[in-house]
Image (tube, rainbow, N blue to C red; front, side, top):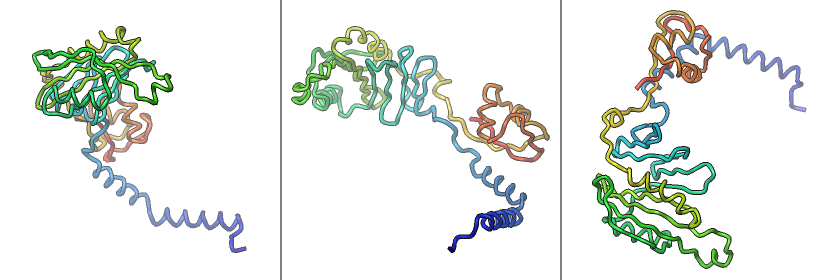
Length: 260
């Protein structure tokens, strides 16, 4: 057999490990770590609030300068393509996308065609001074769905709102049987879409990783506090550093903190 015996293999591995440690040396490891940390200095940390964030049941979008309320208890998912939200039981959902078309009526027509909708009611309205178009419609089941008759009929409330060079499509979807229960919830969100004017929200910036030098030897917690890291984020930042808050850090070594 060409395979070495287990005892031999273990000796070889131990010898290689010792040789590698000797060659690498702790100094090189420190240099490599420091150069890596310097490279990630300024890297964005977490989600970018410029692309939308939720606070106190309101969704804000600083870059596009709009806001709307989120129903209490509803979960929200924000992606570049759409904002989607719904209650825990999945009995309804709301979504916001950018409408495809040059006018409110053109966008409405495209939606009716794409979603196979039968319009129940439609009217031009204004939403906080913005031109808008409101529509209630039923989804027409296709032949296959009609044969199966398993899918509950669906009714939607749609608000198309023109603002800032875009047409925003806010759509609330639920079963026809549930529609009257959810219509006030849908309307409360859609009719409170408005321009974002709150300066603090408009200026909200993403967090970034900043690399700092430990001022005096002590615990990681002490080093983080010396850079005014709030107590409520110490645990999170210790994980970012791959250390415990009680771990010792020496003066002159580098650590990660989080700042704007």
